[in-house]
Length: 182
Image (cartoon, rainbow, N blue to C red; front, side, top):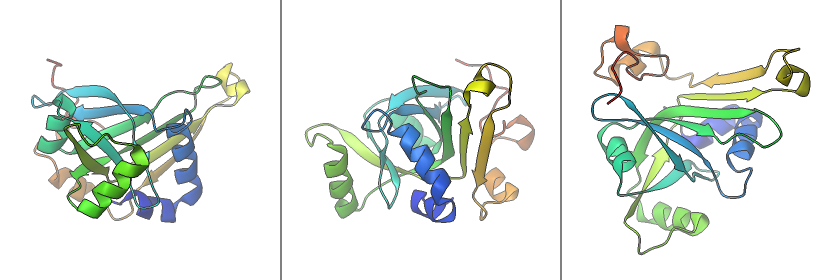
């Protein structure tokens, strides 16, 4: 998995455009998908913090934090802009941040309240996608422009090794797509 900074160094324009969509309303805003204990998906609104070093999120004691602590796989999707259906998507693994200097620095940037029971997670990037729809495409006259970045260091076998679900049951981004929702 690549860090946000590694992804941004490899594809700076794509990273900037994804960052703009995630921060279009000021602080970061998006939807986080995690994997429940039974393998089903769970979706939560979050406020990601993007710095030159990484993509982070403070997560309070909640089902989503337990999901990330147990199984770090995630997908993050931007909130749609008011004027279009443009979208940004990032997926990979989240890891708890234990370095006190990083936690302090990101807490100041994200205005994280010190009295709250939160933990900082860094979201590493396996896949990044940006979809732009111009007005003609929005009206059905054209196709959306889709740009996808895949971590060049991650191989199919490395992605499979990171999961315990048989390959035949995995969806496109590693989620078990055949299990019924609970």
